[in-house]
Length: 142
Image (tube, rainbow, N blue to C red; front, side, top):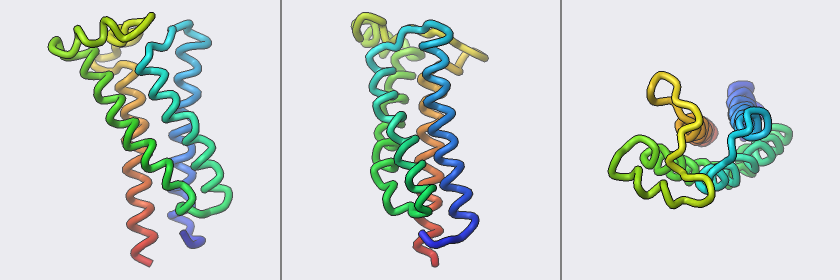
């Protein structure tokens, strides 16, 4: 990646986004007492390692070691989107009822009629994915 300040800043933003998402999910489960459903666990499995992956990449100032983060965030976008559809679209809603001990169509939060936990996770995954793509394009342009 080179020692350019904009690249280092973007890498730190990606790491911070992953950290905020991880801490947010822990807040919902550990402080608020919201039991994660099966799809929430999959999103956590994809998000939590991103804190380490991008933290190491930022520390070493090397985006090339963060390729697994790009892949995991891309998969995370898909899982979060599917989870959100289960919550919000009637055709998908039935699929979420048999998701596990906690139904995946459960909406613990619903701010403004559309902001749910999968929406927040999906937004974080999208931000991480897009910023990583921008970093890759900037790195190739040099």
